[in-house]
Amino acid sequence: MPQEIDHWSAVPKYRQLAAILRGRIEAGEFDDVPDGKLPSEASLMKDYGLARNTVRQAMGVLRDWGMVETVPLRGSRLRPREQWDAPAGE
Amino acid sequence: MPQEIDHWSAVPKYRQLAAILRGRIEAGEFDDVPDGKLPSEASLMKDYGLARNTVRQAMGVLRDWGMVETVPLRGSRLRPREQWDAPAGE
DNA sequence: AGTAATTTGTTCGTATGTATC
DNA sequence: AGATACATACGAACAAATTAC
Figure 1 (tube, chains in turn orange, purple, blue, yellow):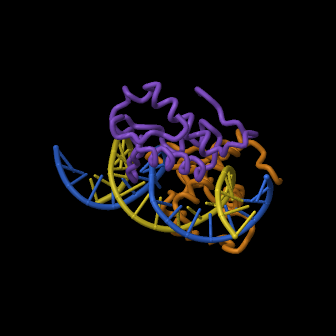
Figure 2 (cartoon, chains in turn cyan, purple, brown, orange):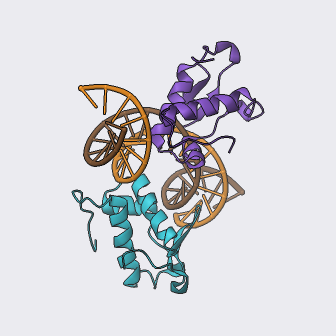
């Protein structure tokens, strides 16, 4: 795991996860994955020890940033970098 | 949106929402809906710009009035008018 | 061809912490 | 002290469509 959730931080976990995933994405970790597919919600729950709600909230942040799109029953995948909205706090 | 929450009123928001929903119910807005199903908590949060707690509190008032029953994972639905308790302030 | 597993969507229940009035 | 209100977080259960075997 590249980075872990700080269960004591004042920063909400869903924001922490969003930031972590942003880092992994920007590091190019998913560029080789077919369709730029991201880990499933279940996978992220397990990897980071978070509830599904929280994972989904984090994915919502990435969607807001325009980095990711989620398709029901298919999963989430990267969007082209040109279409990203600058995530606040950069 | 039939009516909005007054964020400045001295009347608590959850009571305002309860009154608004009572109005919508009495206007027959949900009579045609299958099972008399009411909007979900998430939907009400969005429509009225309230926190989930507040929405739930409002639904609790409608339950106290006997107008509505809530079933976990299913939602809330209307109860027969004969079973309503007169809401205070009528 | 068919069944099981996977995956996101949705829904309510509950609890905690913070802030305000 | 208590009521109101928001945000966060976990849990649990069901649905529906797709995917895997």
